[in-house]
Image 1 (cartoon, helix red, strand yellow):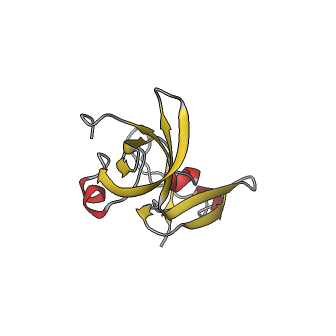
Image 2: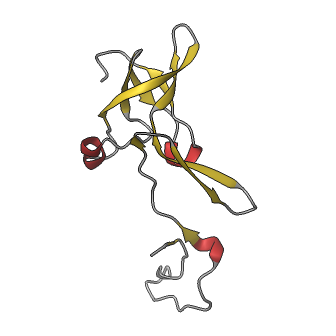
Length: 131
């Protein structure tokens, strides 16, 4: 099953139905969200429109964590997912998305990248009060 982002299913401004005047097109095709978890590194490269490539992380155990005060960035191991405000179910299952709070050896950090779209986990250190 796939996701479709076409506009044929929508209604007209008057409230009437739109009639399908053509079939579905490949450029209207979407995909399901990649739910990045903690574990051995697994990536999936998908082909995009205009011959672009998108690297999606299925699972990862390292993150590039930046200390804002010193300006230093280090690649550190992720211990666990502390909190994910995006979805309470993601919180329970330990899914990493943008905005998730992860525990690292340097301390708690907030994810600033989109692992399912960017192909990397970037984070910034946060204080104990935010996690």
